[in-house]
Image 1: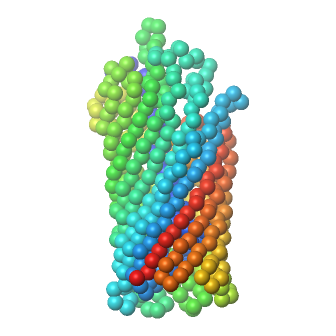
Image 2: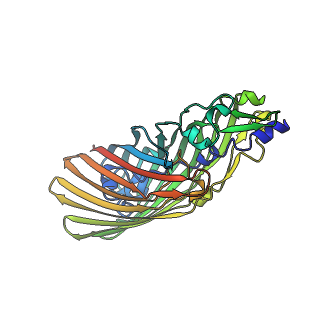
Image 3: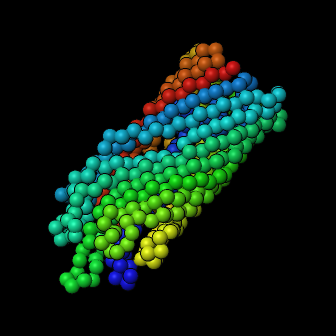
Length: 425
């Protein structure tokens, strides 16, 4: 057991670095997102269940709505002048579904479901393991190095029963109870372990796979104030949700270290607090201008600990399955506008989203970039039917990491087409 413990010193360096909260999606609804996600102070359609549940109280009719987002990331990682790789072309779906019904003159109840967080990467591996192990030749490992799968898929789905009330015609309150289901799937090379045999054996641990999922709960509270017909203010607060995830970790060649090839694995991950405030103004009849500040308590993702049920895994990896992510709290600045032309509307927006992860914890399987995002879209309403289309382009700032878990140069761009449909009855 002593020699095995020494050999596993690096086994979780990459794996545990991935276990944050994924990337919180920047909002839902083609209309809201086309306005840069600056919607907390407006919140006047069914996507208010996400942005500011107080806005649901504005509904005069029953409403059913559906919005779909498709994240299309393109990322490149450069380790050195002789090695670089790009992600495969994949789409990561997200969305929101809502059903809301007025009760009496002042209350609205309903149910929303949305993907609070979710993203992933799937790398086209052209010899990443050999590049990481350089200058050690692949044949020095037992068994020799191969090209393994480097892929992650992170997500969180929220079910949100909702209630909103008009306290007065100018003051609205809303609340949702958030039942969250989270999942994390990750595949990568399990790195290597050095056994102190004579001569020493450099064990290639092979493919490593982590598949965990579980539940958490929280709430969202919202306030919307309309001092006059041309202006409104909003505040929204989403509480922390402690996600308890469980599943399995497998390591292909760990049997060479006289350990079982898999272990049941648990992890507690906090989905961080979110606080946002916004204002919406109509300077002229057909134009609405919005502005938001949205703050996320990413610092809650401090140290994360994988817990292994198998006693041999637990003993061998004692002290090596914890990681200080050192994520930082971040403030997003958002702005948007909407101009109506009869049944049509055109929209545009911008927001800045700083990266929560420092360079020291950056790696290829979790995207953490500072983004500048530009958005645009249009909508059409006829009677009680509305359709909206939006397009978002997130420009990730290039990150040059000199020290840390995985040095290199990281680049990311994301296109997000969006479509929303809603019907009042």
